[in-house]
Image (tube, rainbow, N blue to C red):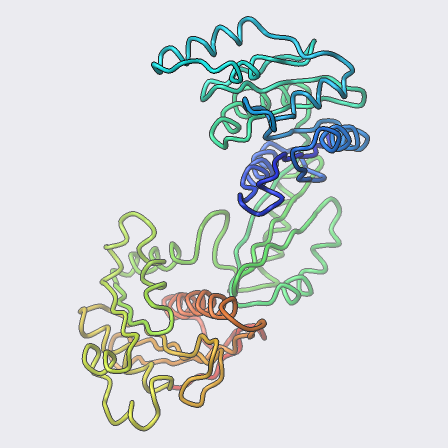
Length: 429
């Protein structure tokens, strides 16, 4: 079954609201073996909505719309569906009664405009909204079925799970399909795809690449008989081809992997951050129970703070400035000792938009101090995409990833120099 999504709302086109509904629906449908072939956003214009619905049904078996079912005059989805079906809008007495009861229970006065939510295209099936006021609608049109859902996220999700997905399952929509998402770090998207060319060539196997700063998620989809077993084969081949850059599956984020490795070893980490301003610490405290492995962090943004709080030698700072490999090493050791942790993880560098201490934007040093004499400093060669605040944000986020990846590799006993072109490092010990 081919499904298209149609999201309605001027606020989405103007960028006032992020289209989270489409993202959620895409994931939810994929989880149930349904493939979304197209997702379209249109404004609050009757003729545009009508054209978008009829056009989508020329390609897909079902269309799911969100938005445009509220009480105001710019909520036009129900009107558009009635026009597309060639029928009138009629007042549903049961819906009207529910609306009146809901408003009465809230101690409010019912506005006549609110009764628009009780108007439905003649012959449409009402999809009960147990989470709010505006009902969903199921309308049969030439070419397929339209499921119209409210734009309020929790209401849309409720109707989707309670009414739409069970019906799609009853229609036999679910094909034989198996999916798995692998997470990689430190490799360009194009390099990942190049290495996986032979997997791409496998019958009924599809790979999708979802890039993030310094990371790429790979979604493997296998269809047809024996999908689960063939997925296992495809995943094994992907892991063989990519090696240790694969660090997790599904929703297993890099910080969770690091936490698990630390906990398994009874170890802790403390951080010292300059350019990232606490982002590594925030990442390491995102999951519940993180205090087991995270000993704390120091944001030593100013040069003086590196000396005063971490014990970085004043003559080192005076000679080389704050952005230097020896400074990163000293910061890491200072964090480890100050917070009595097993490992100290530190970052210093130039996030931009201007150079610092003669160093260009994108110069990063990451230090790791561990038990005994362990002291490693790497300098990831980060790309500098464009200029301005966007560059600064990307560099900071990539630095967080590279810092956590350094710690992961050390905990696993991997060679910190064994990295892809996207994460080449200059190493100093």
